[in-house]
Image (cartoon, rainbow, N blue to C red; front, side, top):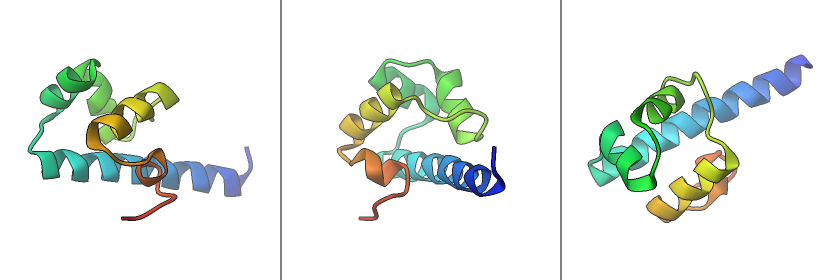
Length: 80
């Protein structure tokens, strides 16, 4: 893995976690409630927020649909 790719990968991971946290705050959701609403486990949400894992494409779709945002927004390719 090149250093440039690794840096971009890490930045995307951080942006996804930051965006999910912001959206959760705006909606007044905790990890358990978000997990319940999108049909995932709370520990999955926790791993994303702690930047231990990144959401799969399916999870990004679920998040984007629930929060009514683009996947590009979640991964930092677009701002609102």
